[in-house]
Image (cartoon, rainbow, N blue to C red; front, side):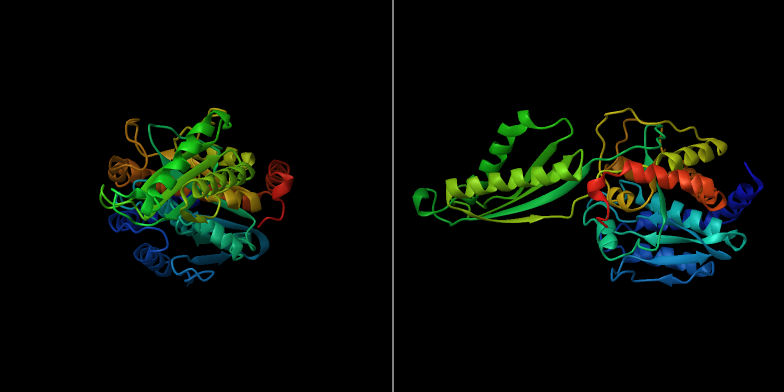
Length: 399
């Protein structure tokens, strides 16, 4: 570890108690997407206490924020991304309190050295990752137009520390069928909205043998009647779509829409269809991932590359990785492989001593990787060349 990296580590160690307090404050006050007012308040208080000016709201989003530390002159612009939304009914079962704390610690630690370097670092608060595509909204509003590189981490489990893990594209479709109520003894007098919803499910199931390997459509009926002797006048469905790429997601969206149209024609019900923003597939920047891997090794955490072709989840950081080089690497907070993300057990793990340790080491690793970018123009050239070759041509200029 270089002398400069040792300085970063020491600066973060000096903030240890404050950082862990921040993690637990966010953990103990879970808020869903675009409602994370307390979390932003906790982060803002920390940053302002350490002398940073915090812009909030940012890009017109009440629960987004940005703070910047400029160096001695123009140079690379690096952002640490913070997430802090929770899961409805579960709390921080995805450990976003840890993501936020690592970002705050990395930004604050590296800021102590910025007077020695050209460039600038920032921390950007990115709400609503679990639903609402906060980063997509921020991208569309220009939040990353003055950023060259983005870094964040994500907690994992089962002792799995992964760099370069990709993610599938995803979206959610909401379908509401409107029919007409009638007594079940005279069903011809009504229009069964529930039947229309069931038709959509049946059609999708019939088409599954034609799906590509990474395709997945999972749906639920949220509302479909109030009593067995009443023809349902309303049926609300929700479908989660995942696929290898955004282009394939767009094809699956059209598939679901065609199923809805056929259900309308078969039942006489009418439908409203709403499609949420698409979470893009992820393009991890290999040179940046390798640097993070090396930095974590210096902190005592060995990381590995993922198994090719394995099915993974999705995140709106994928959209960011299309615009600029980005990493979103995984650090385990528990060795127990029976504790799965998005569970109450994982919520408990996210406030454990093991999670606290990852808050500190993750912050150090992110800050050290950002330092590598600041210090070496050849490394930046390697990162940029990899990104240029990695992202498909059809996505160029999308954001």
